[in-house]
Amino acid sequence: MSAPATPSTPVLLCAGEALIDMVPRPTQEGQAFLPLPGGAVFNTAIAAARLGVSTCFWYGLSSDMFGQQLRAALDAAGADASLCIPVERPSTLAFVTLVEGQARYLFLDENTAGRMLTPADIPDLPPEVRVLFFGGISLVGEPVGSAMEALAARTAGDGQGRLMMLDPNIRPGFIRDEAAYRARILRLIGLSHVVKLSDEDLFWLTGPGDLAAQAQAIRAMGPCLVLITLGAEGARAFGEGLDVAVPGQAVAVADTVGAGDTFNAAFLCALIEQGLATPAALAALSTEALEAALAFAVAAAAISVTRVGANPPWRRELAELY
Image (cartoon, rainbow, N blue to C red; front, side, top):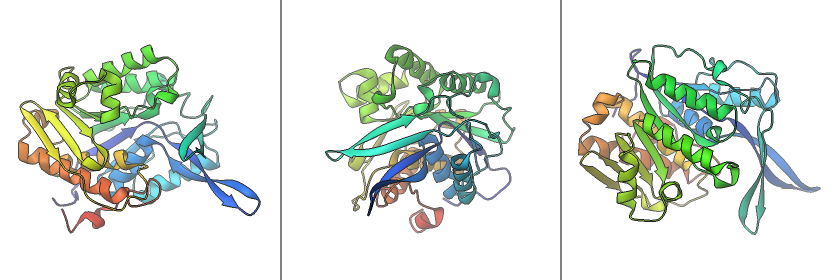
């Protein structure tokens, strides 16, 4: 695959949460917190831009110092944040602590720039935006969850033939109204062309069972493709008459933060580069093309997990392989 370079290359819009991870760091005085840009959809935008995809991002970005930090990170990666109007509300903060080796989060999100987005804030999408990615915890809270669902519904019904991909990136600890959240995710699955789930996400939605059967049950709700990530074991994709598995790569794992986000970006990158980022092309996808896209995504995620934090690879780091 060659990196996208022509003006006619489809633009990817990533819509969803951007936040500041407050990561603990030891000091002589005790413990301090290092503010790092994060959020699943934000990470996907960064990863896609680093891979050479023309990428724009939409969410509520604060005018405060943390919002400026998030904008700077998008700019450094080459992602366009011009759709994000500065908001006079605070940024979302996620304080991370380790309890017996397990990460725990104090999530400060009330009345924040992102959380308070409403359907009235949805921008008109530029015609060059041909692919939309959404998901993450921005689908949980209100009114932002309704705004994201409204964006998906508007895109599905506008007749423009844009491709939509969903990764709910389910975090049960953030969910306050499980019935409402499940209903929203099922509606969004029905609107999407590609749905990516971890195996844990899949079984949270469907209950225990055979992975292939449960994934096909999700696909029967409407998507052309259902992608299942399996951690170190790689990934598997299901489509009409398609069941493709790609093994994981043996690497020294630093941590897995952002691995799924990198996978998402790389899969869309591969579709765009092959000229397959349309609903019609996706419906006619060959086994070979799907395997190539899945392998590219697994390879990019494998590089990501060798680094501390969400630090996806640049395209040049994959150039020798793809």
